Image 1: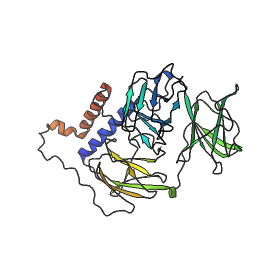
Image 2: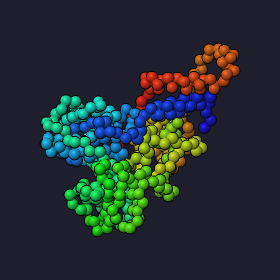
Image 3: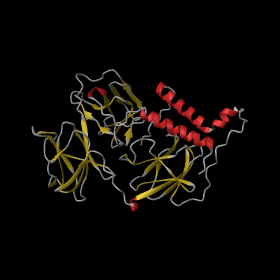
Image 4: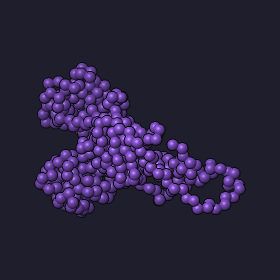
Length: 391
């Protein structure tokens, strides 16, 4: 798609603003204990296994996938559940029954909060302590991820501290790991753990003792004797036959269209941060390929400032024609449609430009734009803050 000079400058402006603003956001920061706060909740009796979903003003999620972190019962305060979250969290959702019931977004502050849930429509947050006694002690945690042989059923994690032998779980084979549609099982454990065993089939197959550091670990198990351990998520090439291509047509004023994709209801995301991945141009369409376990997408533009609602998709190539934020059509064969109408240019006569400015060209305009963004970013005012879409 050919871009006019003005539109190109706007795109550059947005890209520069994104780089500068994102540079100010502490993604991936390791938080000290004092930088966490506790979220308490009291839920209706039919809300089983309550979970917490939480995020910050910049869209950073506290947890990787919906429905978030399972909340623990406070044995000293019957009916109350709790979970610690990083202090950057500004909004939360309490949900239960595997994410099928939930509150609306609830605003929080950088301090402990108590949420009383009467129903999905009625929930109230209080910053006054509604429980009695001391709050449960905070324990730093890490996550162990695992990929296992197909015949390892109901995989469990056994975890302890060596050489003192302090166990996380009371009995072998430990606790069953949570599964995700992207092929990884996961389990959170205390950060003081330095040894784990992955096992399955009621503990009848297992790895040897695996020594780990106090940080998130990814373990790929080939068989009982062979595994690989890393502290960054391995890049796994997905076969072409296991991918689907998303095609989109968007309104002309949706700059730099991006794709956000996940699996519902488990909430496994393809991309780490909103607004997802910028789509590529292919003929008259914007496109991007994602794994075929994806069943939900959002197409957005202008750094997520405009977006569709959640779009359910089947595990095959899909074409989405978007008219505006509330209207779209989904096809599974390329439709014969025309591109959305171009945004009308302002036809008002522009004021005369001094010759010396005109000779300077667009580079001066770009410099002014970049300086303006730097000033705004440094001053901490006037920055557009986007919030990640939740499932």
